[in-house]
Image (tube, rainbow, N blue to C red; front, side, top):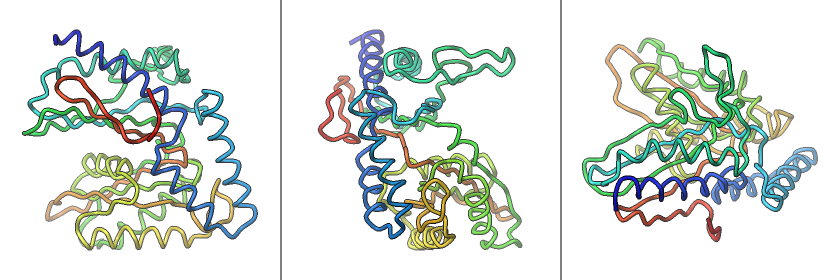
Length: 299
C-alpha cells in the first residue's frame, strides 16, 4: 500500500469516526453519567440528568451533534516507530476534519487570529491540533480524538509554585480553578490535573489526564489517593449538574505527573464537561482498524 492509499483509508475512516464521536458519548462516560444519576438525591438534579439523557438520545436518533459547540478537533497520537505511513497521518486528519465539518455536520468554529476570519471547515493554522508520542517499538497508530469545546477550554489553567508553598498549593489551585471557572463547562466534570516542572508540561499532562479511560487510576498509590481525595473534596462543595446545588461537580479526577525540578512545583488543570466527546481508534500497519469506545456501533 502506498502513502497515498493509506492516507485515503485513514481519511475515510476518521471522517466516519468523527461523525459518530460528535453525536454519541463513549461507553465509559455514558455509564459514569448513569451512575451519577442513580446516586442523586435531589429532585432538581434528577431532572437535569434526565434532560441530559434525553438530549443524548435525541442526538443519536436524529443524527445531530450532542452539543452545539463541536469545538476544535484535538488528536492525541501514539505512533509506533515502525508504523509505515507516518507521513500520511497529518494531511489525512486535516482532510477528515474538513469533510466531517460538512458531513457530521460540525459547527464552524475555527478562526484565524490575524485575519479574524472563520476558515469554514475547522482547519487552519496548526488546526486540527496534533500531539504526537512516538513509541520506540510497535507498528500501530493509536489516535484519541477529542472535541475541545469553549466551555472545556476556557477553565484551563497552569501555574508554577515554589517548593516552599508546599503540595497544599496544588490542592488549593485545583479547587479554585474548578469553583471559579469550570462551572461554565456543564458539570458533572472530568477534572484533569497535571503535576510537572513548568507550565507547559503541567498543562499537557492535565490534558492527558482527562483523556484517560474512566475508572483508571494513577499508577503510584499516592497519586491514586490524591485523585480520590480531590474527587471527594470537590464533590463536597455542594455544586451539581449545571452548576446548581448538588452533590457531584465531578465525575472523576485524574492526575498525571512527571518528575519535577528541585526548585519548582507546577500544576495544570483542565476540565471536560458531561458531553466528554473523546474516542479511541487504532490502525494497524496493514491499515485495518478497531475501536472500542462505542461498542456495537458500526462506522
